[in-house]
Amino acid sequence: MAEGRYTRIKSRFWTDEKTRTWNDDTKFLALYILTSPHNNILGCFVLPKLYICADLGWESKKLSKPFNKLLQDGFIQYDEGNCLLFISKYLLHNPIDNPNQATGAIKVLEELPTSSVMLSLKQLLEQFCKPFLEPLIQQLAERIGKPVTVTITVTETVNNPPVIPPEKKPEKVAYSEYVYLTPAEHERLLLEFGEADTSRMIEILDNYIGAEPRKRNRYTDHNRVIRGWVKESLLDEKDKRRGSPTRQAKPTTDDIVDQYILGGG
Image (cartoon, rainbow, N blue to C red; front, top):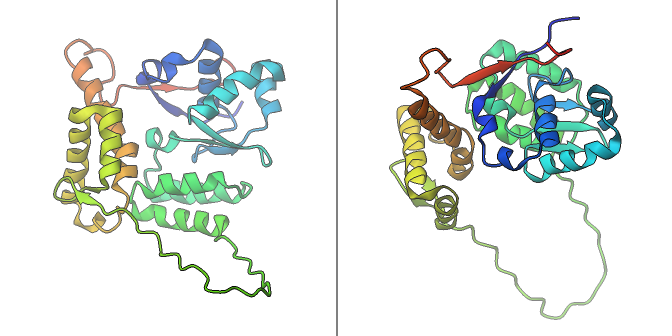
């Protein structure tokens, strides 16, 4: 059997708030998807449900409930028509690290059917703000395309049609030197993460943008960035603080477990 890909899975998988609500079938399915032989560098791959059943020895009826749970919790997105599955946070844990990998990812993308889930993939890649990812992002933009506007002309007499003013976007407020959020975005962060964690995530992003002046104009949606890699950085900090005094014999960099499940190996 040819050597397969290694997938990076953090030990936090087992203590994550959502994971702890999953039953054993859902956890097993999530691990299968992460380490599936059908997976690729993008975490976006064709995976018919019949393949899952064949690989796991499950009947279709058994697959339905855990699969839907992963969809509901945002762990995956799935295009039924093309059988295209996207692991929502795969690239946060398994990033594309260099131009050679980015070139390989473009070749992988060329083999995939065009799908609406590619928009989420594109948005995730944009968060990294790495120049060598630009050709890949551009390829995705071309694949997704722009919405087509169809104009239908109807002859109708209208007396004094109402004037609808353009909708105003909510203004963003500076919550640090470089981080801007709308008040509603900031309020939701406080509700979800609490004041201390929200302040720390804003600080992490502020320090990063301050140290990288070129990226100040590239990060336009700070709320999305905070909920992406910034949140992961905060969780890594917490893992290190909890594990530093007693885990000298275990990996401590990101508390990462490299798992490879192929043929039980």
